[in-house]
Length: 395
Image (cartoon, rainbow, N blue to C red; front, side, top):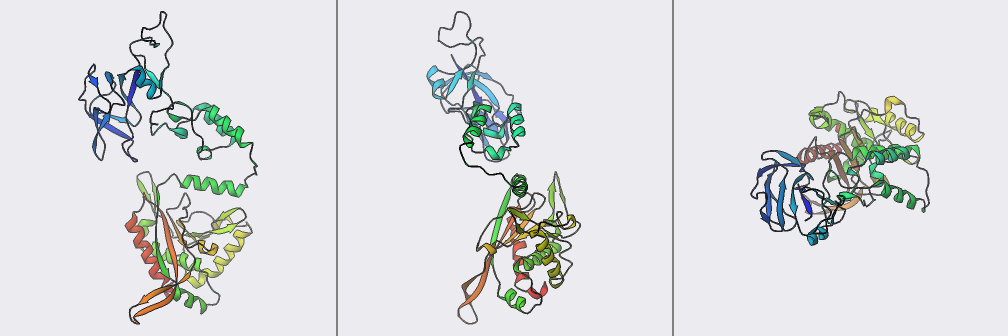
């Protein structure tokens, strides 16, 4: 009779393991399909582990009050040939001399049916490219590939794993398409975004009225651009509350020595981020010349090392492309990214006049590392930035 594994299921997106708290079924007892064979406890709830089909409990491989990772084998069921085939399982053990009266090649009483890609849920720690064999890793290193580059491959191996054959077939089919070499700038941006995306990122947003800012700008010589206004407002807000400007490293939040704010500048085939040092300590009017200088250096790809890196946040003005809303991704070493959308004239209710009046409004978005701050703190930071932008004389 074939034997199939009972595995620890994925009990939630953030659940990596669970503790065995009760074993209601004994070895040798019959089990019905979807019957609870074990009870497990996570940080959030107590749940049952069910049998994938009817059969007999053949083995229990766990101990009470011990924790096991998602995908771990908890025990085995003796099942019928029909159920084994329906679940996409096949016998992998070699045939004994004399064969088996049931037609299965089981060399010992504990010979286990091994999972194939069909019908068996993929364990969270082993699905797709989450697991790579040493041979796969060596081949990918040879080609300069990352796991994200191969996210579209459907694995044909056990539990959905991508095999070396899957990789080679994927590469062979790529040659059928037109290809161009990625620039060093594009590769650098891709690497930064790949590392950024390993964190849990979240976004909040709200509108800001720009009429006061635009009126203030008309009176200034030289004139600051909207992104510089936003950079200065962000710097002041972070200077007032440095707790949310830190980075999480292990079990500690590392706070910056200075409020250095970067701003995104589009360059050939990529984006550079010059940095305004001590932006909370320098007035808007005194930042203009340095800001304009850094923009030109960035576009010429001649930024000095002193003007790169080390910033705690970035400002990007995606409104220059006509976009009203976006959720840009912070750089890997940063916790925050403030985005400014395109200004639009919209109706706004004026209580004093008792009528709608036209105002210029733009959307502000804040992308942040959710490990460091929550939505409430992000919302309050955005509110403070709005207050400062609507009182530009304070910048």
